Length: 426
Ligand code: CA
Image (cartoon, rainbow, N blue to C red; front, top):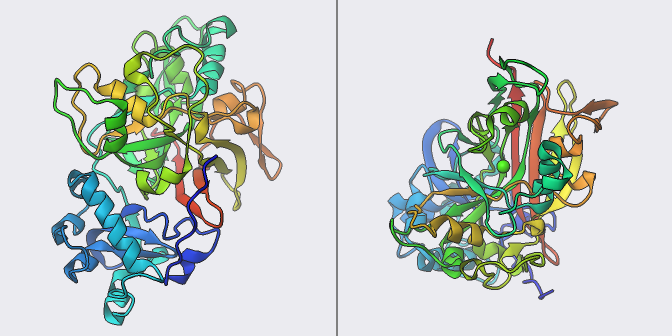
C-alpha cells in the first residue's frame, strides 16, 4: 500500500483532532444556511466549523472565482468551472487554513468571525442540484446475495455482470439530503402463491448502503469518455442510501429492473468529499475473473479504501446500534468505470449527475449493506440493540450511514446520511 499523506495542521483547532471527520486534508463542499437567514451559501467543512466561501470570495481571498458562484444554493456552478479551478481553489483554501499558510484569513478577526460558522447551528441542504440519478449494481457480494434469494444460487450473478457495470435510470426528483424523513411507500405487491396482486403499504422496507459519485463535468450527446477522462470528471463522493421496497421490487422488476421500489426516496450525505481529498486512499479493484473489454480497463487504482457502517436507532429507543461494517474497496467497478460505461453509447452526461455505486456488501453477514441480506430474506432477525430485532425497517426507525477513509493521524470523513421512516399514507 502506498504511503498516505500526513495531516496538515490548521489554526482551526477542532480540525486537528484525530477523530474529526473534517481535518484540513478533507475540505468537503456543502450548502448551508444560518438561523434567521434563509440565504443558502456554499461552504467547506473544517473541524467543527463551516467556512463560508461567499464571504471569503467577497474579501478577495479566492481570486479566479466570482462571489455568485458561492452565494448559491448548490455547488453546480462551481463544479462547472472545471478541474483546474477545483484544484486551485483547494490549494488556496488549504493555504488560508493551514497553520503554516497565508495569514490573510487567520489574521483578519472580523472576517473570521463572519466567515466561520459553527456547524451545530447551521442547517445543511442538498449540496447538488441533481441533474439525473443513475444507480449501478457494482457490488459483487450484494449482486450474488440478492440473485441467490430472487433466482436461486445457480443463477445468482446475471451472465452480463462480470462484463457490464449494470445500472438503471433512477429519479433525481426524490434525491433528498440527510435528515429528511422518508415516507413508507405503497404499491403493488404479489407473493408467488397469490393469484392476484394487492395494493398495500410496503412490508419489506429496506436500505442500501452505497456511495454516490457527483459528476462535475459534461460530455456532449454523441460522444463518450474514457475511464481516465471519467475519473477527471468526477468532482467528489457522498454516502447514498438507496431506500428500497423489496416486496414491490420482487413483483415489478422483470424485465426492466426496479421502478417504484426505488423511486420514492434516495438520501445523500450533505458534504461532498472531493476526489482530490480521497486520492491518497485509492486502491486497486478486486481481481478480474474475466478480462474487461478494453474501454472499461482500469486506469490505475480507482477504488477507495473507505470504512463504511450502517446504524439503526429503532423506534422508541434513544440510542443507535451499528448493524454492519464494510468497505468501499469491495466494489467490482469503480465510479470512473461506471461513468465511462454510461457515456459509451453516446449518452450525454451533465454537471450534477449522481451515480450510485450499488450496494456495498462484504463477505459476511455483519458486513452486508442491506437488511434483505443481513436478515437473509427475513429468515434471520438482526439484533438492533435493547433486546429488539428487525428483519426489515419499522415505522419510526432511524437509519444512518457513516463512513471515513483512515489516514495516519486523521480521517477523511463523510459525516452521516440519516433518515427516519414515517408511516405510509392512509
Ligand atoms: Ca441500489
